[in-house]
Length: 411
Image (cartoon, rainbow, N blue to C red; front, side):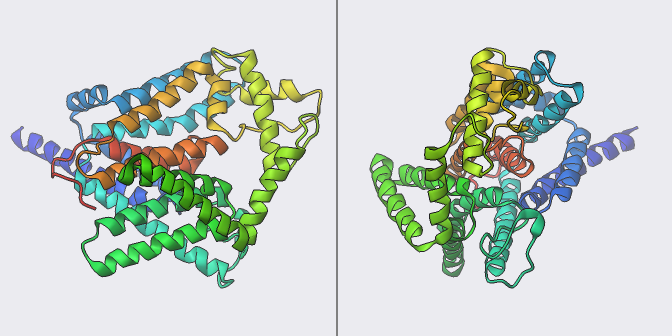
């Protein structure tokens, strides 16, 4: 009996160890490989289930504000399937999309230590370096064009579409900068610094994802403010203005993408079907706001957006999207202002629990994650798109686990 107990304890320890390595592997695969993501998530959940310690895990989840905020948001989205329109399959599909949010309390309950957190961060950095190098190679016309992703030498996104690529690469600028700051070796420091500069060039001058432009600006404001206070905000605004002005003059891609926004905003007509990215999104925003005005408190139900949108535009013969390309509007349309407030509360809790008194650079990464996803949600359903939501959920769980049993985090 004692041998069986010892064997079971060992199994739990090994399962917990394997779960830690699964998070590391996910850090590497999320930017590049969807199939591997699914396999690793399954392995992570299995190892979590085997490793035991349920009483302590429940205590950690209930005492961590971020985990509680996630559970409240997911519970409300789940309740949203009980009202409104939408077929049963559509409701189940949207619940499945939101289910990845549960990775956050799962990771919080595991007591992720500093070493595991560092491994995952370095794995993400390595994956983003690979993506960056291949993007430059594609931009030089050496790699074959990936037609499925609409990638080419003028828009050299790699592995993901340009919106996702640029959002991740904008975060890479911050991540590489933090790694350069933390490095004690001069050559490694310069290597990460060069990588940060190249990532910024990739975002602004090469790949055409406009969301990345906004994320990069938001992260610059955050970094300047954290290190230089409110005076740093003024410096950040000046630096961003100069950088973006130079990019507008130098890069045809940046110039055309900015001009397309200006033209789309001035020429959009809500009564006319449009098919370019800017005016199409404005059309989606317009009719989604009308849906929200009709159902402000509870929304049209989780999974009921497409049906409600179709009813609004059926007389105009306009196309019906699966989502409005804005996570905030989508949540409000689905589950009302209550769901919107719960989503904001999640972001606020993440911001508040970030520890800036110890290792400020890790605090910068944690808040940078919130800024990245919060800005991304303005232009796409970032909590539903595969890569964006896994990136957010994995690193939110790691950053908010709060188990630094080995002392200060040292990347």
